[in-house]
Image (cartoon, rainbow, N blue to C red; front, side, top):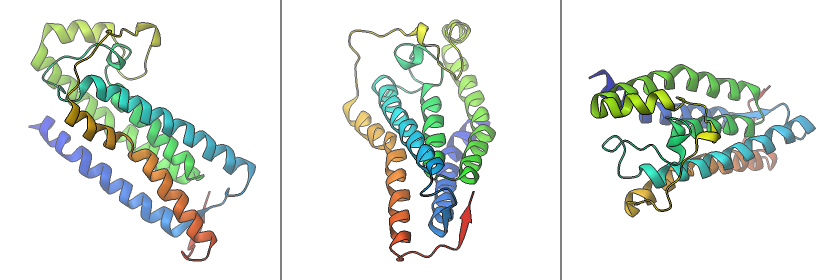
Length: 201
């Protein structure tokens, strides 16, 4: 039951956090905007968001339509056990950097490291229950979160569920869409269309 509750809450809580952050960004302006530091933060954020989007698409090629029913151990799943969450982490950090605000970056980082370890723990318990010894062997040979590129194993071909992959592809791009939203807010603020209530460091 605990696993299902965590899984059910993951997406709603993520959406709630994103909504709250959008409202915060809507009402504020970065103190570092139009500075060298701001430009570095934004460029770094865009780079991480791009890596995250590509990485999530890579994961979707292998996992779309399979999820927990089949133990996936190739491609991104050969370098760590939870590559989808790793790339989501990069995207979340990248999004925080793209806001050019250390406050928002801290909120995003704290939310991720507070919540996702329990999600990973629950998923691993479920996978162990489903796949038994096969998962134990995979778990002992593969790092949990941070990838080891030297472990990469890729098949020549992969069976892809096209409709599910299409849906996952759209989900994988939402970090890039949020960067676009952030930039739109900043443009409207500069034009005086949106008010700025306070500055954020």
